[in-house]
Length: 288
Image 1 (cartoon, rainbow, N blue to C red):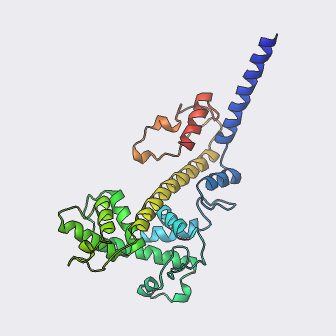
Image 2 (image 1 turned 135 degrees about the vertical axis):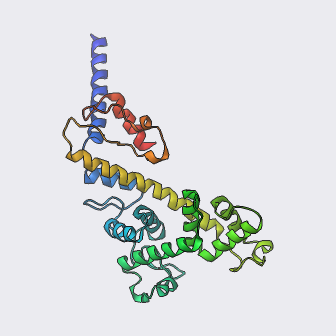
């Protein structure tokens, strides 16, 4: 009798746990679920349909008009201001994207308008376009190297980055490799390098900050891509029938070539709910 009671209790515990997990991950996204996801990634997610911040629509519309990835611009905004539109740094940078008055002048924008979110985001996109056109990457430059060098230019100024690239070229190294450019940015703190005739912007002592900035923004961009992708897939799930083909509910991006089976794809025709193994695989995919 005792043995039957223990077995029954164990079975009910497993069953309750399983359906609890399924209730959490099979249901359409709710405000509470999305807020919890946002909290996990330290982003802002107010009530409604926002995915990353209250400025999603604004950042997306302006960035897409300028040809930039809105999720990358959101990652920059988070790092620069934590999505605070009226912040001013000790160096004088202002707004969501921390735009300097000198940048605003380049695009004929009055200093008094810099903190306006729309203007601030527009200026950041214009600056990114100018940086990209100035760097003149050759075809075939790896995307991560390209993105890292662009972000370093946004953070430290394109002059220091170009100095580092000239030093790399002078020494027979690849000026389009972020690993190489990052090393020469660090070496630009030493007289042997910043006094070289190819260097035009002098000594640079901010390499540690710039390297940390690049790593942080790229890491956050990667997370924002996953969050945005997940929410789009859950929107599709809301509109589908109960017995639907399940979309990818994992957070790891397929474009990285990761095995889809690691993302919890158990069966293409499973009912919403699936099996215990399917539910657990989805949990692993979300938190790995």
